[in-house]
Image (cartoon, rainbow, N blue to C red):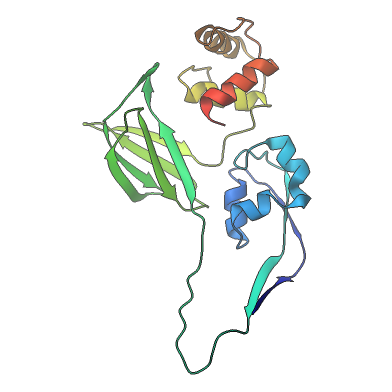
Amino acid sequence: MSADTRAGAYRDHAARKGDCITSIAAAYGHFWDVVWNDPANAELKELRQHPNLLREGDTVHVPPIRLRTSSSLGTGTTHRFRRKGIPATLKLRFTDFDEPRKDLPYQLLVDGAPVQEGKLDGDGGLEAWIAPGAQKAQVLLGDPPETHEFLLGHLPPVSEIAGVHARLGNLAYPAGPTTEEMTPRLGDAIRRFQRDWEMEETGEPDEATRQKLAEVHGC
């Protein structure tokens, strides 16, 4: 017979730069979905839409740890316990404009340690399990290798100008230095994106453009 009990009370975590639900949950001993789907975070979930898109200063309500107690184990014997965990998934796709860079050899390093190597799939993608609190990924792609670096958990929400800017850059629409304000170069990048996806070329990050950008980017 077993029962679940809660230890402690909710804790409020103010998101810092680089934080995401995955890393916050891991720091407090939770699976990411336990924190993300907790009713106390319903408003945040509705606002951000994706667990890896927090804004610095967002308040995440971390539920108390749920303890499981059991009285069904006998004494005088050896018991083995296996800790369940949910690693994070890193998905990357490399293209040359719209053409996938398929079958290129790669080596993936996370926080400086080798994690995986192989060849990009037919869509130019790779997928790997990584630690929930990982901060940086590096891909050595091709032969001789090109170096591509990614800061994990640093992507602003698409509702912000910085989020639009970052996604455009990731999709090969360079928009100049990162900014929180609209600039002529950012407007040009938006127009190129709108043209490629057969949208009205306004050069403005309107709601339709933001939604399409999030769809194409993947989040």
